[in-house]
Length: 209
Image (cartoon, rainbow, N blue to C red; front, side):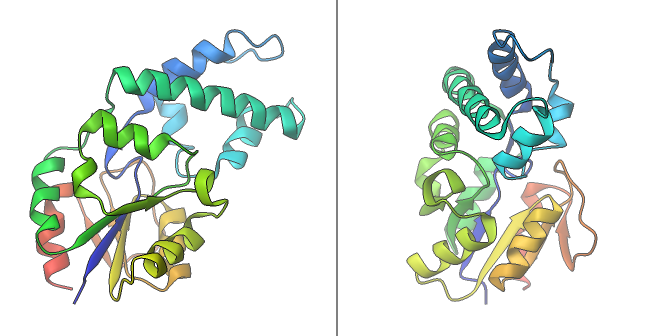
């Protein structure tokens, strides 16, 4: 029987790409060596990847240290923007979290920078639903190891991971836990056993596992 649920963030709980694209473009417009305007669709294709990979994909003309520094500036600006304007929460998110919280401990594990999950929780008003969270910006570890860290730190016996990308599926496999594909999200997954087409379908599916 499942005792806990670990969630990816972007493409699983919310869509912040419109706001983040605007924020990043503000930063990029001030960069003399960058001639680029990003769209929400551009970011949906990248979100979920480790930040250094996103940086190297977007800023190929810059040295690695400058890529990461620019990514850090973009992250700081997105936190400011998202603290003023919440990203789009997926339908029935809070109502479904209320149902799930009655039976399971809830967590967030995302490949994001330090402060991003906190920004989501504050902007959405959903802090009380989650027991713990982890990300590379805090731990220095990628998603698979952060899944293991959350499991160990909280003494979880039978967790499941919910996400929308192949990276999420791989991270769940790495941690040795079942994966649920959020098919409404940003990405695709090669092979999966469990899936939902809407966040509100999770309680019934997880109760059946």
